Length: 241
Image (tube, rainbow, N blue to C red; front, side, top):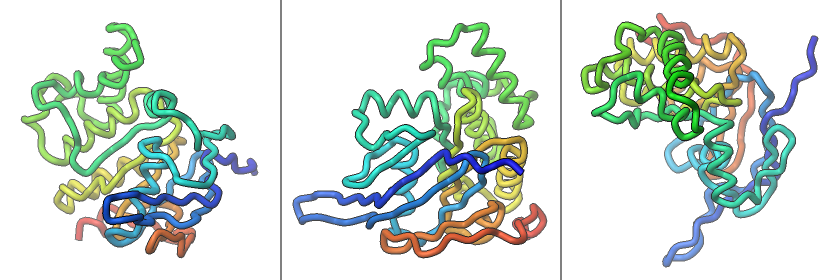
């Protein structure tokens, strides 16, 4: 049996926002290890700090204090340019609101991360077509995203997150704007991506959605209050009921 390889390690990470009204602590000394290849759900009510935690893990924000190691490298003190490079090269994001460009086709939306990387037109077109096929949307590749259903739009967002072969995929409330059937299909797709080796970190407040993961981390009032293995994962049929 292979020894788990840590991908993400945070040590006593805190985050406090300073405003005119004073200091607002959001994370309070959180320590956590996520291994390469895991499917992890971060759960918590609104205001618990789960989104702030994801933003730090995804290089969208920096901790006020504490250490963050990604693939063994200390990234907690990177400047904005270095964080932007990490975002482009190491992570893929799937958000509740999709964030697709409406005047672009499915293929053009999926290619965007490769454009930022300077990949040639031929190569990025090939890679994007593969990513689109992997989420079952080859027949929609040249449709504008305004012509797609909500579930299809989220699959485009997943293809865009995958196209540059990131080390980890962050999914922030990926089913929040979807009906139960489309939501179940998106969660099944994320599970399939995990099954072929991708590290997936899901942020959700929905128990049924979290049950697709293999591990659930619970956050409350800025603190880690639970870390458990999921003994029986949700199925598409259970989610859609």
